[in-house]
Length: 176
Image (tube, rainbow, N blue to C red; front, side, top):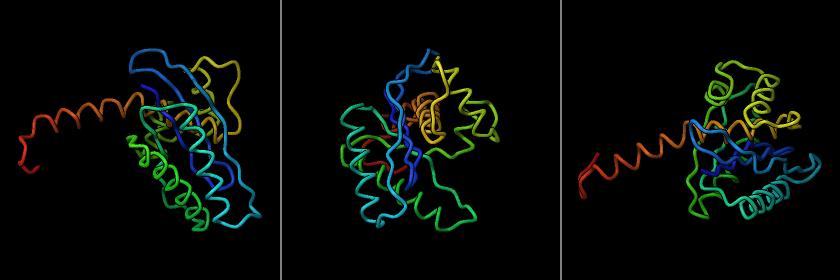
């Protein structure tokens, strides 16, 4: 399974692609960020994020996209920008018919480090170790995007198979 992880943000939108399957070593395909200027108008920033994600989708050709689920923070302005960037990622994937999964920060932390309360440094260290990288991906948004992709390979694949099995088991016309 090839997964593009997206750590949404207006200034830095982290992107990371991995390939693998549960129980086998993973391979990093690409990692980076799409940047927009804080001095740009919101619409211009969103168009820039869209263009960047579309380019990544063209280059990586993922089977699925994993996006960090936006959670409520104290700074509403930050939450709004993050949610808007997440919406762009979901839109780009949906436009191509790609499955999209939203993973919470604590779910990603638990999947990658074993602790739902891990800090950025712990996440970066585990991503580096799991992908056998010579150094930690920077900035942290890029490492977080890889962590999202890893989480989805390990957890999302099983969830997708379960959903597909349930769909096959439900007789046509029956309601769940």
